Image (tube, rainbow, N blue to C red):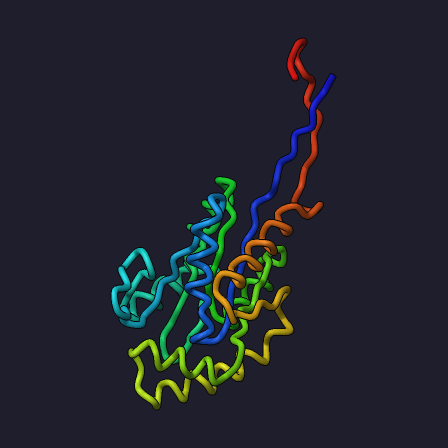
Length: 209
């Protein structure tokens, strides 16, 4: 007699959305509840906010250091957002996928489109805010930006939201836990896709159930 063994191909999950949509908090919730998922830590030239830690939230580098990495081809994707550079370390992503881990990238729309081009098998999720007034309140609530910066972020948000049609899934973050639940449901369903599944038979030993 034989039994069935199923192997799953690991994949990339891209989470994007405008500043203030709550994507960082949503990703944190997803990671807490998904042991086979790892987050890629981005490299950025922007200064830390609040209690952000180097190597945990981001790798914080000077602009010339970022540019050297970029010229060396160290990034899976990179983009300039609000005057700062952000990039995803390609070596880390490749190593995690080889080890059988799904990798989640929290990146902006520019980066999301670059990943789509280079890794068409990636799953792209767009976190949509419930409205611009909510977005404005969230940005003000951070207490890290002045009104001019908030205005610029809102203008950029309108542009970013117009790109939602390039994503596979749209999830509205009007309630954090429900949004995280919806994202987890997407990831679990994508892991079961036939294209990511290899089914093999295994001969059972006598007396094995």
